[in-house]
Length: 384
Image 1 (tube, helix red, strand yellow):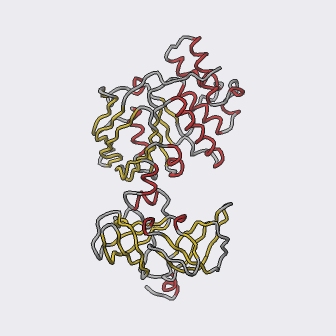
Image 2 (image 1 turned 90 degrees about the horizontal axis):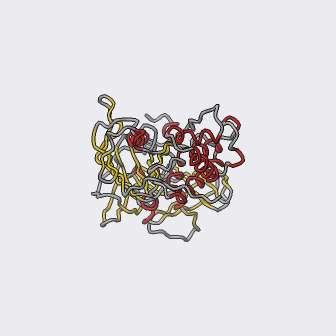
Image 3 (image 1 turned 180 degrees about the horizontal axis):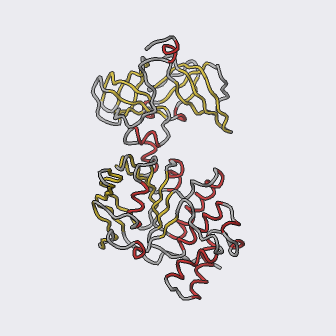
C-alpha cells in the first residue's frame, strides 16, 4: 500500500490578529499577532504559565477570545465552534479510548462524521501504516508502549485530513530515547503530508529540531518570533537567550560603547561583547555566552572577546563531550562544553569571541543570573 493521506482542506494562511485571553483581571495571553503559512511548522515555546497552551486552545476553539480575531484566509473563524474548524488535536496524555483497539481509536473521528465504511477502512489503514503500527492495529491502548500510544493519537489526528494539526506537549510523558524517536516521526509526517502544525513545548531542543519558526512567550506576551537559526544565534533579549541555551548569563555593567561593540565589566573582569540593544556607559546589562562557545585554549592564546583563567570544579561526562563548571578569579562560575579531558582542580584558560558574547539589557526577566554583590567566601566569613 502506498501512503496517500493528504490534508483535505488547504488554506493559504492562518492569521492571528492581536489575540488575547483574560481570566478575570489576569491576562493569560496578550496581543498575539502571527501569520502561519500553509505547510509551516510553528512551535510555541516558553515556561509553564507563559500562555502557549492558552494560545493553542484559542486556536482550537476550546477557549473563546477576549481580544483580537483569528482568520483562515479571508474567513474569520474565532467565533466558529471547535468541531466546525476541522482541526486535528494531539494531547499530552494521548486521550485514547482504553476499551477500543488501535484501529477503532483511529476510525472514531471518521465514524462520527459518518464517513462511508469503505473509505474509513482505507483511510485508517493508511494512517496506521504512516505511523508504523500495522502489527499493533488490533491491540488495546493499554497493551502499547507510551511511544506507540502517542503514534496512535497522531494517526487519529491526521486520518481526518485536517487543515491544521495542534499538538500540546505531546512528548512530555515519554522517556528521552522515545522523545528523540517521536520527534523524527512527527517531522517526517509533517513533511510527508504537507501538514500545517502548531506545536506547544517547553523544550528548546525539541522546538529547534522540529519547527520552521518559533514563537517564544513570557507571561502571555511574545518575546521573539523567528527561525530556529535566528533565535539560536541572535536572541532578542536575555529571556530568549536563557531559553536558547545561554547557560552563562552574568550581570554586568557597560564600561565603553563603540557602535555594536561594547566593553562590559563583569565583577572586575573586562569583556568585549556584541550589543543586542542600545547602551550607554554605566548601563546595567547581562552578558550571555553559550557553554560550547567558551573554548579551552592554550597559555599563549588571545581573543577579541573574553579570555580568562579558571579552576575546574565540577565535571559531567556526556560521551564525546564534557560539561564543566569553571570557577573564575572573580569567584563567578561559567559552564564550558568541550572535548578536552578535564578533571576537578585543573587550571585552564577559556576564551570566547566577541561576536558570540552577547550583551542584553538587564530587564529582570532572568532570575537565575548570579548576584555579584557578595562572594560565597565573604558569606562564609560572616559578611552581611
